Image 1 (cartoon, rainbow, N blue to C red):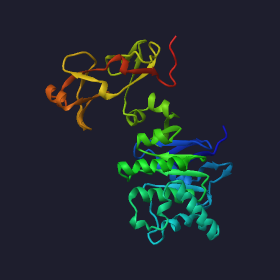
Image 2 (tube, helix red, strand yellow):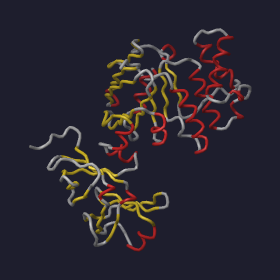
Image 3 (cartoon, rainbow, N blue to C red):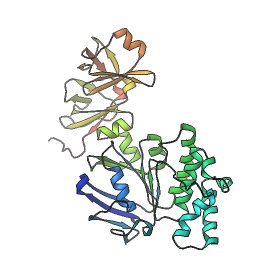
Image 4 (cartoon, rainbow, N blue to C red):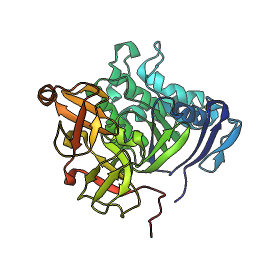
Length: 343
């Protein structure tokens, strides 16, 4: 596969060391907890952060040391930050003009970019009259008008309401086509609908990476599991389930790891059943949290989402001993990456 972007971002002062390859028509979602190094990677690629070691190569061109305005990189951040005194059309034309294009060509670029993201009708408006979603689509058009060789999307919908996010995602799908794109997001739907691959950062390093289906369907890091809405537990394969590191067994009929080898299991917390004296591994409740109309029960390595009625009937409080079971067809067990099968 030809590579659109090949980067090795090394920032010792922030303890970040990340290697990224992004294909010429590929979108990679960069996810991870706060402080994992996502913003550092974006700033380094955009040229906003000076990187003295490592290397950034875009389309065969070495960008290390090249100033931001000469990199051919488009950035769409959380907020549009449009020039308030310029019309929408002039905001979008600003980038092409700054790069040296004449007024006529810049206006053509502006009109084409606005049309591409569905806001051509806003050309004569000023930013102060736009909704948040409209302003963000104009910001996407502004990035497109410069014909970027790389597009950086830094949580582009996080400041928008639900309805506006849907409109902006449609614009982002247009924007990412035909160029390498890096998407930083905390929104699972955004990652699933826009990205081809996912890279998970933890503590300034890559914790796991793969296709969206692989990372979200069979996560190997705690963050990717949580991002996918799943609970991840570790243990030893039994052939028909997993013996948990913290004690107890979860049966599985969906994907099994070889017996006696290091294994991972994932399940959705809503599938778990909490009882006082029923089946399943015994755990001590460590926390109870409200969760979208449910109560999340955290008990060591296991998590269950139960209704308020169930939580009240059990009279749960932190410190209680409970048993948590999960139906076998709701548990997926697979071999832990890098683990060797026992002989």
